[in-house]
Amino acid sequence: MYIDSKKFDYRKFSYHDSDKLVERDKEFLKEAYLKWIQGAVDDIVERQWEVDDIGVVERSGDFVKLLKEAEFTYSLGAYTSTISLVGVCAEDLCRFFASFAGHNLDSLTQFDRVNRLVSLGAVTQDVADKFHIIRGLRNDCLHYNQGFKQKDQATLKADSLTALNSLKHIYGQILRVVDYATVDSSKLIDIMSRISEEAANSDPGGKLGIDGATIRTRNVFANAFGIDISMNNAGRPVFKTSIYQVEDIDSDNEPFEISLRDLSCGLIVIVDITEGDLERIKGESIKVGSAVAATLMSIPNNLEVTAEWRLTGSVRKIG
Image (cartoon, rainbow, N blue to C red; front, side, top):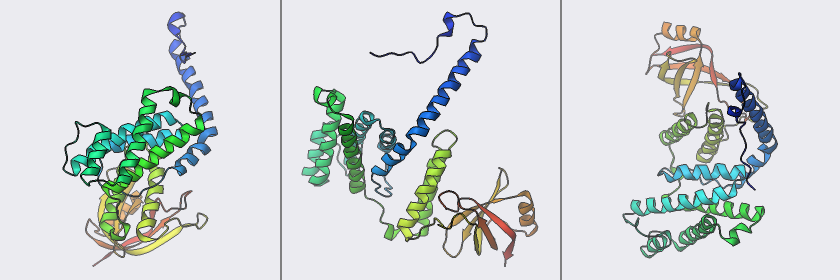
């Protein structure tokens, strides 16, 4: 039985304030979703921890959108959707890689395409085996045969996680994960900028994306330089005094910001400044390209990462 009756049909009644009643119903449903999320959030996060991280892969295509959706649906426990998305993603990744390797194999089936890549020496047999595992799970799912219908929730969960993690490892293996040992400050800044761009264009309001970006930035930095930027200091304020080069001064948007490149390590920090700070900066004739001495302060967030920086005292121009 499929009972599709989520919305009350006010057209059948002569309520003069039906618009208000619709909004009331929406508010009730919002509260229901909030209760569900509060009860499910522990399981959602635990499932995210079951999905393997592979690091940073610079080369990507449209298939990455499907990969991200598959990771999200797995975290929600939508295992059939995960298998379907991974299957489609795997085919697009395979076509993308074949073209990248100089072979036009779009007209072939996924089975023949994978085997042709093996015969050409473009992928290993291990990669091919993973592609075929994903293809088999995807076919069973989309054909919705009797064997697939009989799978219990635990089996579906295991199958979807196998498909998802296999796809991620294929992606990292054939298109190469960035070797952190070769990452310099400019490459790291490029990676951080991309994380920020993705966060800004993520969920409505960007809050989940921004918090997720903070986690990814901390993890990438630790892998690249062996330094944990979580302060692990119970949230006490953190101070940083250094010589900086001014990269940008933004007085068009609130809060006002000044971007400073730390000359000791090459990294850029974006500092929130007040109107008074801005006036003092102008009074010192500080502009883009100036070298300055400054002390910055940040109160770590719940991850104990210094996410927001402010000036303490004045900014002194050097030279």
